[in-house]
Image (cartoon, rainbow, N blue to C red; front, side, top):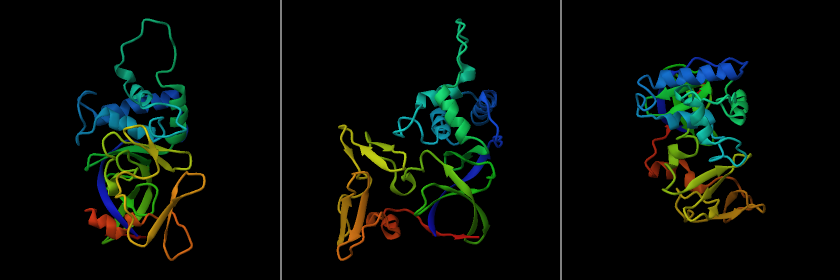
Length: 261
């Protein structure tokens, strides 16, 4: 398979237990802040990462800003991380410092997980089986970045999928969205793009508008995703001809052949 190398794990938290509750999650969030920001929350971590990067990581793309079925906001995630630094309230309000909807999601997302930081300036969330020195790859045709462990030469073993905020939505091969654009995913993982003027499209603004010669494109009848086919074929496929290995390499992406063992 082919993929692009996106960094090496240089720092990692301890693995979360399988049984979580409010206290366990609170202590974990506090320890992550201390581990990645030892000089305080206003500082940056060793690779220029900030607190909002860590908040995006623990949200795993499920905040309302990125997911149409989201039940918590990025502000909820940041507030949960900053709980230790809040001034005590004079009221007798005993509400949880973590929004209940976020707590429910973390109970689902975090068992057995660990948070890592890479030498390329990324936070990520993945399996606690990962370890320092493992590498992050975005593999063509795979829905998620992968944590992979080098064996020899071009051979790797797969540790597991991971969520990396600035790699998990096509950024590794297509770059960031243009200024003012937003991307929203539905429950099936299908994305819609919102332009600065508020209009919506299924067309990724990071791709050129014109298809390669001999290709056609159409929206599915429910207008939820795009399909493509060669003009002489009858079968429509979920394969964008603008994202072939050759096209990506022409954009300056360095692809490698990887053998999984």
